[in-house]
Every structure is written in C-alpha cells, then in structure tokens.
Amino acid sequence: VRQEVEQQFGVSGEVQVTIAASGNGEVLLEDLRLPSKNYSAKFFNGVQMKLTAVATNGSVFAGWDDGSTENPRIVSPTNGVTYTANFK
Image 1: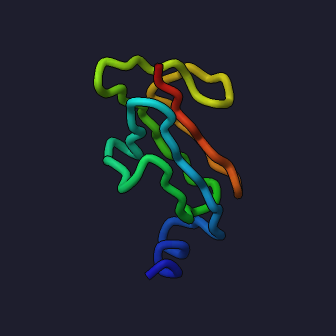
Image 2: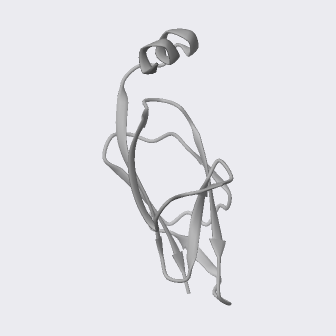
Image 3: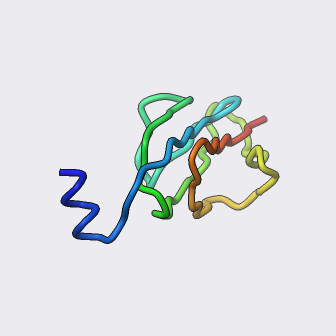
C-alpha cells in the first residue's frame, strides 16, 4: 500500500518524527488525537503536517520547544525531528 501511495502522490522516502506534549495538554495531528503524549512514527518525507497544541486541566499553551508560538502550525518534518508543545 505504501508504494502505491508513493506512486500516486509523488512522495518518496520516510522520516522518523516524534510529536510530544510537556505539561497538561496534548498535540493533535491534522486535528486527530494521537495515541500518546510522546508519539513517534514514520511519515512520508516532504509532506507537510498540521500540529495543534491543546491545553487541558486549566493549563495554557506556552510555545513549542523550537521557540515557535504559532498554533496551529504547519511543519515540514525532517528525519529525527521532535516537535514538543509546552504547557504551563
């Protein structure tokens, strides 16, 4: 199936990406809840993803580990990258 997707949509290769939340909150990927607060998976190389930080239990979103405060944000992941949303 993966090979068919690569051919149909012109994508190739995979990158390992970690999406995490620190504190009381979670990160949605393309508006979908992830199975854990520290999620690691393979994605197609060069395919943009929308990440949304969602605060819970009275916390507030403080920003991403890379200094960005954009929320939601569109990222173009590279191999080994980690996106961590921080909540306080």
